[in-house]
Image 1 (tube, rainbow, N blue to C red):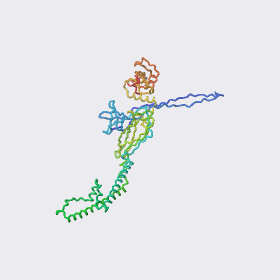
Image 2 (cartoon, helix red, strand yellow):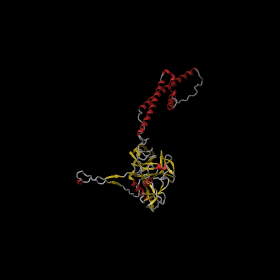
Image 3 (cartoon, rainbow, N blue to C red):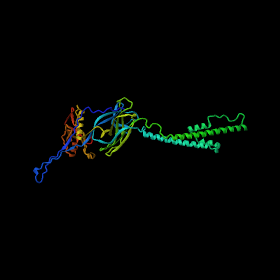
Image 4 (cartoon, rainbow, N blue to C red):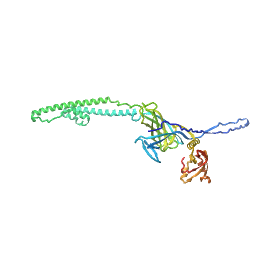
Length: 462
């Protein structure tokens, strides 16, 4: 998996102006009733009102999946799978099927969405399988189960020994092992009781006589007695051995942890004034593996789908595995996206809050810098549209294309119904709406000039 090694600042310097509008209340004279001329004028303190910060400039990251020889931008996350854009269609690519080759590109981004991250914590941790508490719990469960089996086996063996040793039962006591038919204990019990002898034809060479029958009965009784004694001894040994193991087997076996920390634990709360309908997060970790050369850094990218985010804080907590034991953390980044578009957070790198005018200046400088030799018409780029505009568009209003005169600084002028700007439109609602929009200025060989921009409110995306 390829990922970016180091985030670098853009090569082109960007001048961002910070403006403060000062409202100065002129000095006023308060006359006295008796002698107004002798009173000195009272000068009120200057009031400085800061413009509202509406946008955020931050260092973000663009992520694309390399399939074959082509790169496809990531547009979402479902579970552990990436959603990529393939010629306008969404395709799900799972990292479980095969390792993915990702292209990570750091870039400065401007957005009017700022998500608030509170209580942010990230630290090295144990994965679930290597967590000492989990391993301890599992070990204790295994010990408890084993002890229960040992006690049951010991109890059963003692009952068998008691039955076989009961002289009142006589030869029938040997049937106490009849329920022990399966497993290693059954085989061992059979071997102890009966030995490994193979019996030939019991009929004596001269046939059965009274003497041979008596001799055979004596031999059989001796064999049964010997087998019964061996069975009793085996049962008693089995009982004692199992009890001993149960008494000394209260400690879980194995180490509580295989080795050191092998995961990242992340916890925070997130909220956003503008709802995020399909959010997901991406973490990018740079780390040094124990035992590798000094300065050798590896990268690990992790993605997680989130529930919709609103102004009410949502709790996020997860443990990210896949790290080598005892890894050294070099850098950890958290990025949040919505519908494939990255949004700024209060923990974003190199974050700067801007006013609307400052944000427009940045956008305009970027646009002009990217088209140094181009000749292009003016085009809308950002603005705040009225809340009732969607309703008016649904009612069938403003379906036609308008034309706006745009200054070389990107500000809207008069509104016309034709591209030649001969039919002026007199509509106070439209005039207010258009003047709230900022435009990339028209360019002539890369130089800003006055121009005309076409504007269709149904197709407007700013």
